[in-house]
Image (cartoon, rainbow, N blue to C red):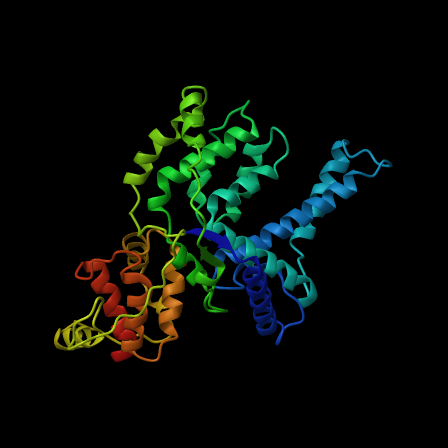
Length: 372
């Protein structure tokens, strides 16, 4: 079996996604500002890829101004005035629907590519950097990378000087192999797109049968062995275990053979996940001093220590994933529906131990949302 990318599905999905977002936003507004973009969708990665593209356009405009042969842009006064002008311009973002829609399409496409194939995505990003400026390029753009950023952040400020593009590309691939089991689940990342339009991973990554062919020589491993000791990149695999031990271990990412997570079914109260009826009975019989129902949205009801605990213990340190989970639960109509959602998206994917204090406290908040 081999995995093929369905580019037609991706293109159509991005177009539909952008059309829905623009239709919702511009139904009440004439144009969009920079601050609107930051919170445009529930997918922080999509939002920040839009901003990243605007930053690139901003730099292109600056380059056009500097290319004029009639003015001395090396003069300090001109440089300062131009910098101030461009900074003011960047704070006056004003985009209409026709200009925004293609930006969203590109951002969605990039986000999906990053979620499903981070090595290729980041290698393509590195290829955009000017010769000798890869470290500076990554440092400048790291704030826009919200998904799988650990695949490249170890490079920033460690590269020093003298390393060519091929060394960076090998380092990204080697680092991914070392840490891939501790990276966020592809399904969970793509779930943040679902509030606008569900993404069908099976339709995007198509499994096809192929004739058996001789296995290729393990070039990446040989390359690492031949070059061991020649640069700091060779230390990637020895440094990673320390990072891996300090981070919670999420479920494995299964890009080669993606599987859909289905909601559990209950038979006589038993299931492969949390039972909403047993939970309700448990919370009903226990007495919680001063327990009140939750008004408004769940995200607004979390104490700071709860937000920190849930992010760290239940959502693999991903604050965006916690935010998306709370918003999804808020849209449910009942406690039963909310627990089924938790089962289908989080319990198995994130390996929750359902009797632990963080899980029980999270479930109690959900119970208070619908039942108190």
